[in-house]
Amino acid sequence: MKRTIIAITMMAIASGVFAQGAIISKYFDQFSNNDEYVKVSVSSKMFSLFTELEPDTEEEKDFLEAISKLKGLKMIMGDSVTDAAKLYSKAIADVDKAGYEELMTVKDAEENIKFSIKDSNGIIQELIMVGGGKNDFVILSLFGEIDLKNISKLAKTMKVDGLSRLKKLDED
Image (cartoon, rainbow, N blue to C red; front, side, top):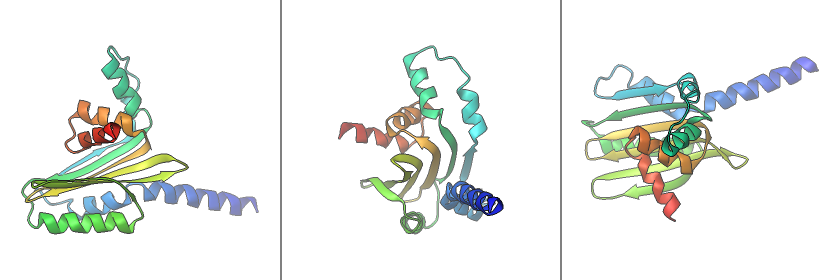
């Protein structure tokens, strides 16, 4: 009986870890050898190294607070993408099919950006941003325990294009 409970627990943990970043992992695999795309992966170790720093300013304190519970960030982006609109639509369909909840969409003449989340017990576990324009495409996955108010501060500090749009949530 104990072995069964341990096995079920381990499977649940493994599936939870696998689920985080599963969509972006698909795109990482798809574009791994394609030099048209920039691929960025930041591990939990990198985030934990930042949290050991002593903040000198309120902005630095906010930055460290924002990343203290993050487990990873993965991003793929290209600015000269063939069929960018088709790729954007496919990524949006993948996100929707995986059961993410739409948080916000920003559309204008130049670009489309959609933010979606997965949460558990009211805590955001993963934020996915999919963006596309005439020739550009970006998909970003941020996972861990996510506080949206701090993420817009993080994006501003790190200068992550698109994530800064989350500040609009604070305005509503």
